[in-house]
Image 1 (cartoon, one colour):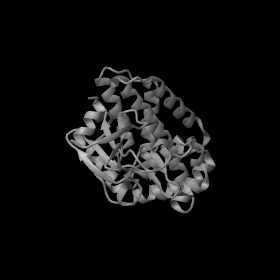
Image 2 (cartoon, one colour; image 1 turned 90 degrees about the vertical axis):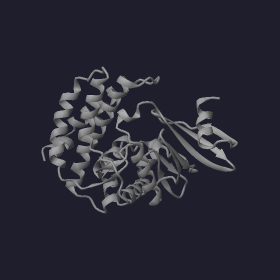
Image 3 (tube, rainbow, N blue to C red; image 1 turned 120 degrees about the vertical axis):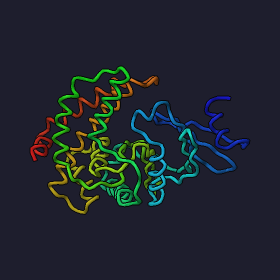
Image 4 (cartoon, rainbow, N blue to C red; image 1 turned 90 degrees about the horizontal axis):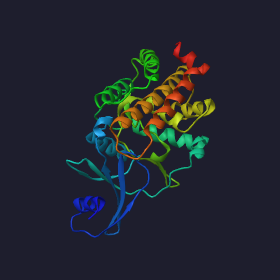
Length: 292
């Protein structure tokens, strides 16, 4: 029996099941499972994901909160102690990256994010400023090397933190990659809530913005769709948190380089995000936002 078959048997003992491995996911395996004509997704947790700051209890609560407001998949079961999550399968497609920049799609994204941000409370804190430091410490403890770019980026992050002090904290997703959106033509849903936690909504907005390569006009459209208008202070906050989004992503790659046994070039991933945050830091709009 394969590891995947064993996992399915663990959840549905003695039941006949058809299993398909879904694409996506570096740290987990997602299985589409058909049992008695019903479709589910079984999320099998990868090794050492706790070192990435993932709390499976928080992921469960966030997924349930997202489902409650119509943004996420319905939770069917939670398997302990492994922390495997079973959700109902959502029919839909990952939207093409370029379509996510369309004004109508940005409005749908803004509505989905706002629904979750304004939704039920969830446990867990996501503080991007502490996350990058924790990733540094974890990598060092595991014998990893910290890129030379860290110190300069960390100094900028400290300045951003001073500017963002006092920001209101809400439930956030914090990992808004294109692969984490599903569109069935009517509803836009968000999946993979493993990095969710209470945090700054501008991290979510900036994380979406930079992951979907929004230009300045696209970012303004996102803010307008989310808030109903566009304020200079919000444009500045988004600029600052785009930097933090890439800083988090770069340091995530640093930890993975130190701990992961997967066949994936995490060093290149790290370098890519450090290069992008350096480009962001050089932009006039970012420098103006950092100057306050």
